[in-house]
Image 1 (cartoon, rainbow, N blue to C red):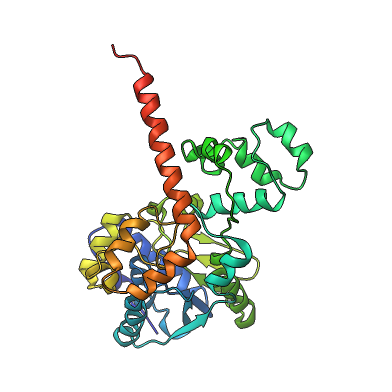
Image 2 (image 1 turned 120 degrees about the vertical axis):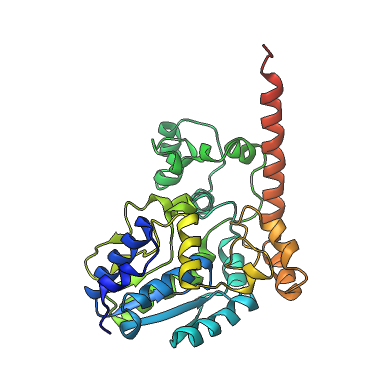
Length: 329
């Protein structure tokens, strides 16, 4: 499909970030011939799909949705809407291991993907959540270097230190988890099947709807594009701020699922995922719309919900103690 890039940019919003993203997308799309686009049904994904199609990717792209088994019905319905709107087919892929299976085998997600991964590694090495220097602990647990560095706040980048989450280390030492923690549900529900498809189909470009403005580990990427030995990775909407995204959607008429417009959710994804810091409000908002899914989420993530609540109460108590300890002028 031939795209007139000059006409595309001329008709775009008078916004440098959006126009630059379109130019970059057009350039990368035209440099690749076998593209895979990961469609989540979320707001960022909606913008990415629209942008890729406007830049000529439609006829050489496989649009893929990874069904974790804990998806909102509104999200699944939105996929149908996207197919009709853009005249595309979105392949529905099942998880290698369903979320309940992953939780049972590896543990529940807690707080964030990175925190869960580090705690998983520590638990795997039978770590006793000791408050010792890294040099001491690495001798006791020699195969747990990365997680111990996180636990001991060794990295200079705060993103990879436990003190990024205030009082989390103190809380864990006083309240060691009595259940397994991991981020493996993400790995087996999405990443593993994505990697398998990448190898099987020989894609030369993988596209995901990740924005730097979301923060967290996602913000650690240096740019929107990673050139790799076999399959390059591209994040078309990476540089768009919330404001840029809203302007793009208004200009091009990009609409989102009922999760946003009806349920009032700020995000989509797995129902009740503990990685969403406001999961309590999310569960309350959705209970009237999809009660069966909410019931399932509460059963699957019960340990994480309870532990998270205890940590948040502990953190607020510590903050209050510090505030009250500061002498007034």
